[in-house]
Amino acid sequence: MNENLKQICKDIRKSIINTIANAGSGHTGGSLSAVEILVVLYFKIMQIDPNSPDWPERDRFILSKGHASPGYYCTLAKRGYFSEERLKEFDAVDSILQGHPCMLKTPGVDMSTGSLGQGLSVGIGMCLGRDKRKMDFNVYVLLGDGEMQEGQNWEAIMYAGFHKINKLIAIVDCNKVQLTGNTEAVLDLEPLTEKFQVFGWKALECDGHNISEVVKTLEGAKESSESGPVAIIAHTVKGKGVSFMEGKHQWHGKAPNEEERKQALAEIDSSK
Ligand SMILES: Cc1ncc(C[n+]2csc(CCOP(=O)(O)OP(=O)(O)O)c2C)c(N)n1
Image (tube, rainbow, N blue to C red; front, side):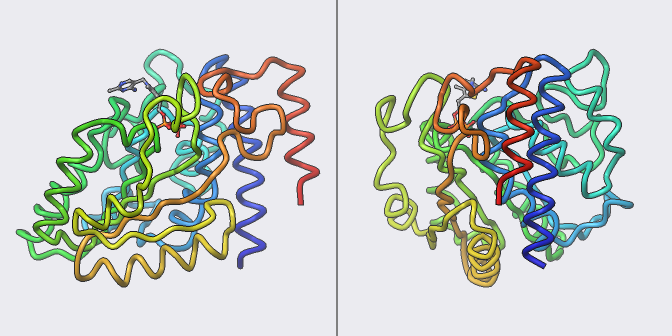
């Protein structure tokens, strides 16, 4: 099973490179860092039905770091929400695949995002609405570590911890690099795990590129979230899989040219 997920991750990384290169725009670094998290959620953990994207009982997912839409769209396409051919429309005027996720246009997108800092609050709202309706699904929110500097997150973390919002799982794609540089230099977040804990959350850490660790941590989080909110700090590498992009803030929102595209695809292909 994990070998299969590994191959899916490789395919999605190549798809991200091609999608962004084709459009000439898109957020490369933060899409590549989130691949294993997205794949484990969509291919293993979440209760979903790509043939019925609006199924009321489905688990919900919010890409709070909405700029990583190429990673999200390539995962949704691979999972069967729409054809992979449509990835060629990424970021085009009136396309179903806008630069930032739009719930009104894209099958499988549960919440429109892009303005950082808002996804966790929306996730809490989904949980409150779910409980009022006596429904029973999980809500997953994927955030960036740079995004954790947004104040609204901390209101949401305080609220969810105090009110013991259950079946809410926040995953921080902790790639340590944001738009203009290293997160620790721009505005340090550490100790992030302990911060979640003192706000009343259970907080776990994992290697966000090790598929079996991501699976195990998400399964554990799902169980623990029956009694309150859970955060996962997933340690990742921005630009993961492409040597000249890894750890470089310059690749936060840059599209590869033809030569860079070819080199990136070759590296991903030959990776173990
Ligand atoms: C409210 C808001 N301010 C600024 C931006 C512009 N912006 C887009 S991505 C980004 C950096 C985010 O860093 P991080 O969360 O670490 O993203 P990742 O490294 O995972 O791509 C910024 C400042 C935005 N989208 N929303």
